[in-house]
Amino acid sequence: MEISYNESMMEEEKVKIGGSYRIHCYKHNGKVIRSSEDTIILDETDDYLVCANNMVKIAESDGRSYTTKELAILFFYKKHWFNVIAQLKSFGLFYYCNLASPYIIDEDIIKYIDYDLDLRVYPDGGYRVLDKNEYKYHKKVMNYPETIDLILKKELKYLIEMKKNNQGHFNKDLIKYYYKRYQEIIDSVPKA
Image (cartoon, rainbow, N blue to C red; front, side, top):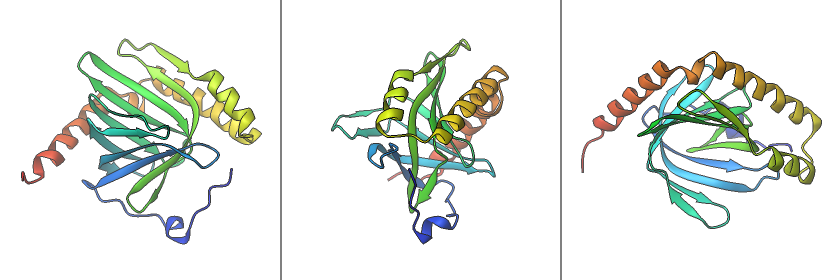
């Protein structure tokens, strides 16, 4: 699927650290399948955008909605085909990694295309690849191009290697750093 960008999206939008953004998750066919609000921008590097949210409402396209139960640190990559949610649960640090297109920002919305496959990482270091059947089904129904299939397989392998080596977002010290940054931003907001 070709993502159509208007001119304002072609220029790299400057994000506001501490700003509140929404997230829209699309499928390959262009339909929004999930959205959330109140995600705070913590940092932007040459490689990724880091956000955090806590007990945020998630709305699904089928009408269901729920509120997350814990603080999450989110990494959206500029060149890699995945994004990562580090979930700081009371019983350990979990990761939920979505195989997805690199993100774009359109005004105050972070947008990406979800490609079904997920990597779940547990506090003990174990991991599982999820939703393989969903990926096969959508690949056929939505006619994923062979190039996307190749990219996703390569990116999944890279993501697993990062996990095995505790690199990047899998480095617990990096998560602690962004947790502290989130607390500083939240504490600096005047109380109403």
